[in-house]
Amino acid sequence: MPSALFKCGMLLIIFLSTTGIAQAKTWKTVTRDHGKIKIQYSVSKRIDEEGNKVPWIRYTAVTVEKISMKKVIALFRDPIEYGKLIGLKTCEKIKSISDNEWVNYSTASPGWPIADFDWVARMTFSENTNTRTVVFTSTADPTFIERTKLKRISFDNETYTFKDLGNGEIEITITLEETPTVKVPRWLLHMAIPGNAAGFIQKIVIFSKLDEGE
Image 1 (cartoon, rainbow, N blue to C red):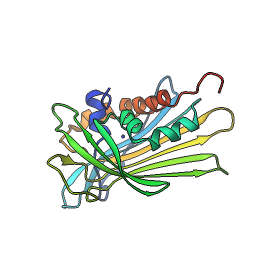
Image 2 (cartoon, rainbow, N blue to C red):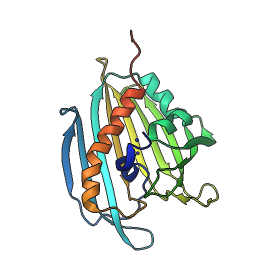
Image 3 (cartoon, helix red, strand yellow):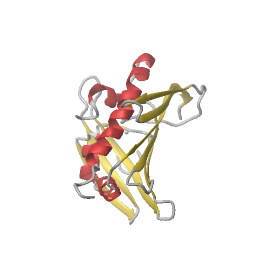
Image 4 (tube, rainbow, N blue to C red):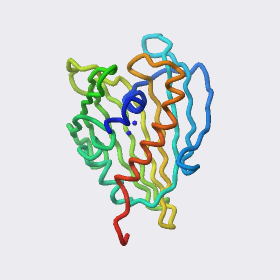
């Protein structure tokens, strides 16, 4: 993570948490949107901070599209628009650490069978003009503020890389690793991940579409 979270499927994928060491490394490669989107994903096991074996979901989704880099930057830096992209109920910036690092606090109401939860995420932004690359990262920081009655995402790592190819197109790469906050059958995760990853990257394209004449 990213309708609210692409309905049930995205609910299982975007708002998740992970730590620990993998016990298996099985990756699958699929494509979506007539081969335009390449997705590599893995559903394996890891050991969490309490010593429990839990699912470990990882994926990388890549595509090339004609989008506005300016809109991409504005989208990810604006917590309200970013919240709409992810499918959050609320999303607000609660602390600015620097011009390129800040903390968002979000809430979500996915609906049955997933309970409402909140999410504290440390966001970063970097831009390399030499390589024409923009990178945003999101890392869960569950202890940054006091817990509420809502279940909180405990760990989540996401990286969004946008590379200007110099021909009017931008390569979009999303990498994400997480563990479901609820028990999810392994077969359902395998079924949901490719479509959810593709759907999320397509939503970024819609939000960042070039204006006529750009």
